[in-house]
Image 1: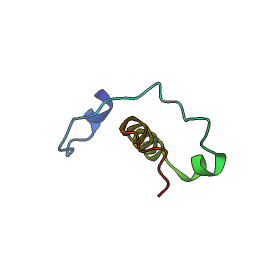
Image 2: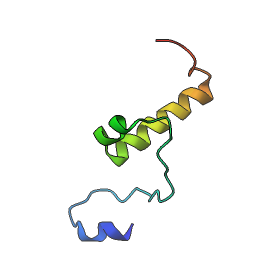
Image 3: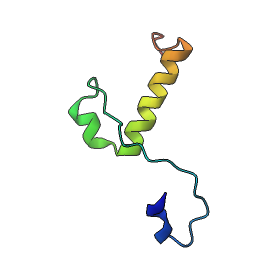
Length: 60
């Protein structure tokens, strides 16, 4: 990522931009305001993983 060239002490260059991420409509305004972009993406990734594993309907 060319944006990272300005950081000389960065030990990694493993990343990718995510330009087309859309916050799901079932996230309410309060949730969205309290989370940053990375938290929103990781929460959504966790939801999708639970759905794919067949665990999303379990009550915990």
